[in-house]
Length: 208
Image 1: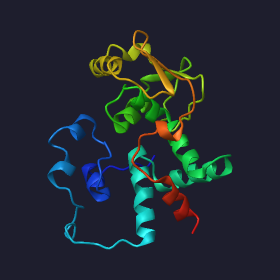
Image 2 (image 1 turned 180 degrees about the vertical axis):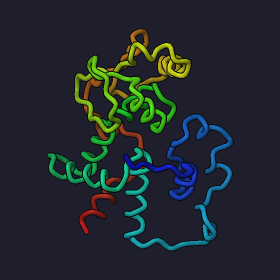
Image 3 (image 1 turned 90 degrees about the vertical axis):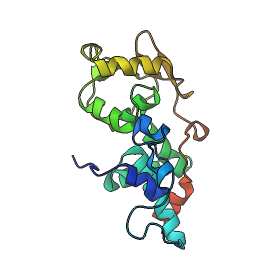
């Protein structure tokens, strides 16, 4: 499956905001945005005047990069959001939040969505007692996400379980620290999704 393999800090610099793609590094003084808060490349420091299209495009790219979704997959999410009842932009963010790798990250069982994606692919998590290795798997209300029994002896997984015990998940998720199990208690509302994006700009971009 295709995926982005280049330097992730360049993505934050390109969008001009922290996308928290590198986990704990993003909270330290080693964060690229803190050290070089301008776009990468030869002309990164040049002043630019953005068109309406450019602003909309940047917002779409920002969301794609936050959730680690490639272009074709993102388009599929948007088309699915359009077919659902309600506000398309909010539907889009809700679908992205329901991805299994994002849920693992939101529960505190991974330092970043990138790490969550890798852990899911390596079979470290179960959904309703069944091992799921597809990061894009969409959870439903009532689904229980747990750490696989065989993975609990891994040093890194132990660290993440301890991390999750000290983390407060968003209101649409609950977490049992003793069982290392999270549950989807509701679908997220817009005010519970803390990504710094203006989803209406994405809708306008695809409506052109």
